[in-house]
Figure 1 (cartoon, rainbow, N blue to C red):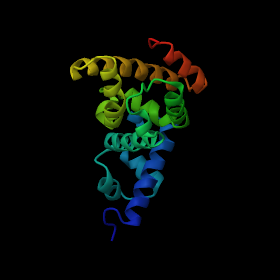
Figure 2 (cartoon, rainbow, N blue to C red):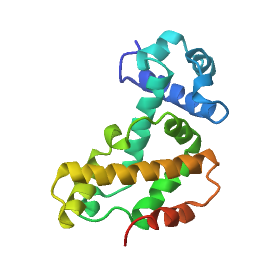
Figure 3 (tube, rainbow, N blue to C red):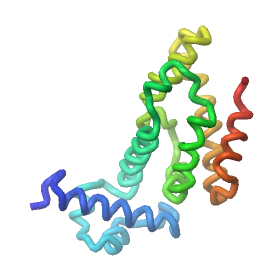
Length: 183
């Protein structure tokens, strides 16, 4: 039986995700249907709906997984209390996005909120908040305004970058981003 978290269940979910990512390379998200994913993955629609509510639920859950993969690249203890806007922090992030640009193009095109709501709590707690406290900012509301301001700017830079096929190398985009921050 294909029960949640058995090998067959995990294999089907991975197959669905891989087919979806392949489709994002050649289609806009609004052109991808559950039916087309099921055909590509060679599964029944009921199998798809066992895992996801619809294509946008698939995108959201896959985005959370990808964001977790990005965060796994970092030693969060090393970030504790340090400013996270350095080339050492940004380059692995940009390289990951470049390597998965079709997926992130779809995510950034549907972006209606900020990534802090999608799994970046560790970044807030280990880097943003301690850094703000070191600078004498004690109000979490004020910290959030700074964070949202930087996040929105970086998000739009990333959107422009992936929309243009990540033509600039990650280190060049990293320099553009870093030049936007006060020294």
